[in-house]
Image 1 (cartoon, one colour):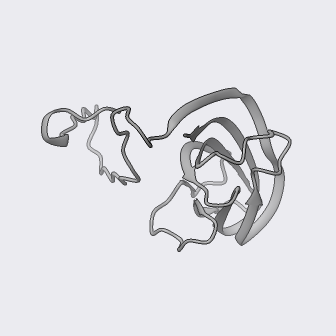
Image 2: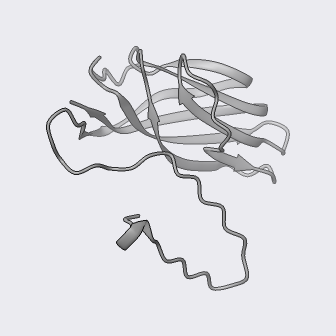
Image 3: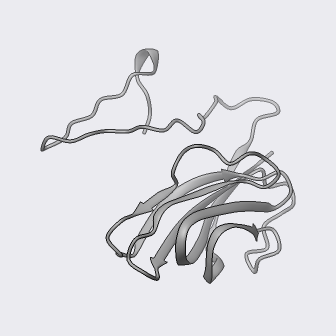
Amino acid sequence: MGAGANGQINLLPTNNTNVVIDITGYYAAPGSGRLSLHPVAGCRAVSALAFSQTTTLNIAGSSCKLPPAAKDYVLNGTIVPWFGYLGNLVFWANGTSQPGMTSLAGTDGSVVSNGAVVSTTNGYINVNCQNMTSLYVDINAYFAP
């Protein structure tokens, strides 16, 4: 979603709702030293990883064969909760602190997926969830110089 003048956006709900917006970054104008988006054919980097709590994912070492120059992964995470309630799932760069925001959430036992752009410092990313789930991670693109 692009922002308008002074960073403003418009929301148009069709029913009463609560809205939470997490800002995780922005796209800068092209220029020297900036990262460019490199689309890839969809690739499953993680398939049916069963876990709870925090684990580290080796995206660079996956079958997707992304270059070491990748600084951010454009991914889609899908969860299949084992016991109904998942709670929150968070992706973040390995070697950094876990952010206080949610990448996806599930409270009714449904299969849930969501897109995310996740930074990396070393080809790895971390993921944390509150309850046992199976996780699938598909890579759609990456940002690199």
